Length: 155
Image (cartoon, rainbow, N blue to C red):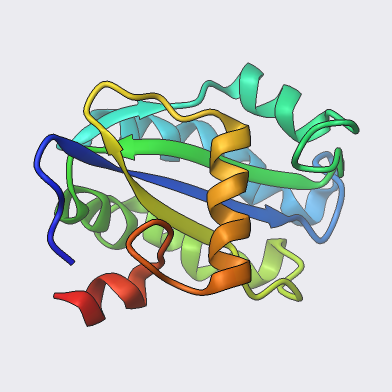
């Protein structure tokens, strides 16, 4: 899929931890978050990430779009382009954590990631990200909400 001129790529991933945040069985994940986020912020092509306090508030808001599950773990970020995001996901310390996701997450939910194009300078909200997530879940991949396979297929 060709990136529209004047746009960046937004990504939202969400999962439910298998155990509470303070459970020793997810300690490696919890203790590695700051490292992964620092590497992301220093990665070429990184544009923006919703801050920890805002993300935590959104995750814990029982009236919010994420449902208030205290085990929710999510990230909302914007990248210059797909190659930049791909490099971070598959070629940095993030990959080590991704490879261990089965240890920490309830893998019952199949859909965990959505991507979409955003105009340069736009900072998506959690409500916007959840709407894209729901669009992908409801209608399948399109140029408005997609995953890795859609990007590869559309090349």
